[in-house]
Image (tube, rainbow, N blue to C red; front, side, top):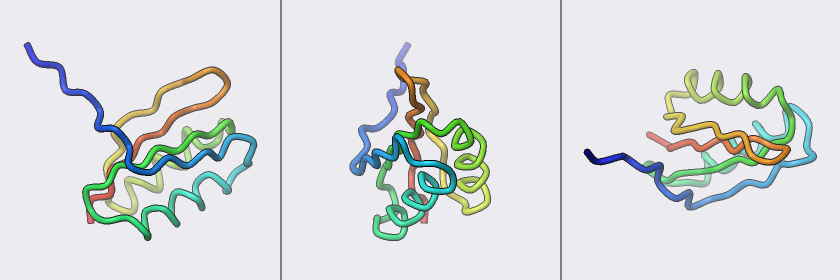
Length: 82
């Protein structure tokens, strides 16, 4: 049985210490500057990002790959689809 691993992000946004909507705004900027298929990770210590970022990703038509709780922050991994 093969386990699919999450692709390694080509862009990492460290938005720890930034409050909503900071992490989301940084993600939007990174998506605009990225090519389709690129994987972007956002590190956010703002608990609102767990809700706001996935909502925006779905609305914008990109793919949420995973949200992982780390030591004091969340790692949100997104694939730009278009």
